[in-house]
Amino acid sequence: MPATTPTLRLLKAEDVLDGLRGLRARQPVKFWAFYSSQLGGVVTDPALMVIPFDDHMVHRGHGIFDTATLIGGKIYDLEAHLDRFIRSAERSNLQLPASREQMRDIIVRTTAASGRRDGAIRYWMSSGPGSLELSPAAGAEPGFFVMIFAGLSYPDRWYTEGLRVMTTTFPIKPPLYAITKSTNYLPNVLMQMEAKKAGLDNGVFIDEAGHVGESSNMNVAFVTRDGVFRHPKFDHILSGCTSLRLLELAPALVQRGFITGVEVCDIPVDEARAAREMMLIGSSIKVASIVEWDRARIGDGAPGPVAKALLELLEEDMRSGRDRLIDVPY
Ligand SMILES: Cc1ncc(COP(=O)(O)O)c(C=O)c1O
Image 1 (cartoon, rainbow, N blue to C red):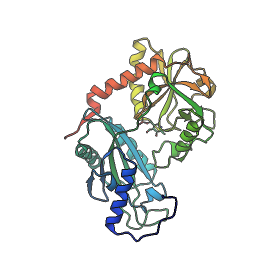
Image 2 (cartoon, rainbow, N blue to C red):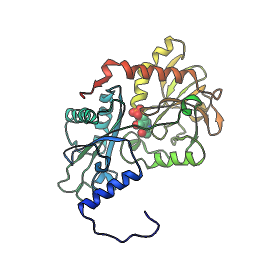
Image 3 (cartoon, rainbow, N blue to C red):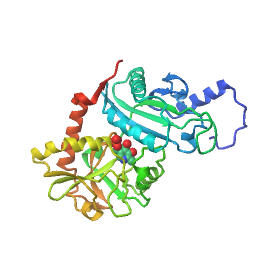
Image 4 (cartoon, protein in one colour):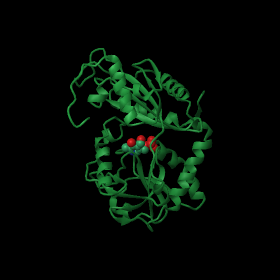
């Protein structure tokens, strides 16, 4: 907003469009295609990628979302992301706006409309517009939105030198909310901002029992001193699709001598701090080593070989995991 309060004009529809275009001109975005069930189609002009303010997803956070990766003209692991999307909808008491097959088809066709071969696909389900109350408005139609965009990007340094993280001072979400991928990310946002303010890269949630939780939009995993790849249980954190896939792929690293085993269990903070390796895992970051936690070194303070090997396994799966890739019909 300008320093002085402008006169309040009564805007016509064309003025609103100009205003939205002005916003985008001041702050260019890499949003390539957007489907809205409310608009009944796909738009490619970012100024038109809008949701009515009275949708309860906007003013009450009654909505859910998920994100899948677009790689080389194929969508990776969409079924796993759709499973989680539908589970999140059920837990949030959201009515499905369409069948799973229809939603998958809309996601695939919106991707085709973008013309892009690499990026990210985020989709939302909303409770719908119609009032400023809490429960869905009378006659509210649940919304479905799909965005094809450039994806989140992280500094190269995270991969070459590793990340520095801190235990957040913000409480972890109670399990029901942590396992549901709703649009309520306030603790996650506050955690990441707190870490950045402290000159660090991200935060880590610890639960009330003193077990490691997760990071802002990523899971956390470890390699113990005796070489076990250890991941926190998924009953109090989000079931990361990337972590779940890596837990399936990791046994190959036992055979190759990188690790001695794979375990999903509660991880007490003290044990975690003694790890040989610590890493962040997620669709956007993939796999990156944490080299410092609360100002103390993890392992020898350099990115570790297991994180690197897991990243390679994941990248290979993303390129050629035939049963996990959907072709986009451009
Ligand atoms: C809180 C949280 N934990 C973990 C993850 C990692 O999940 P995924 O591997 O499906 O990206 C995400 C990202 O979706 C997240 O938001």
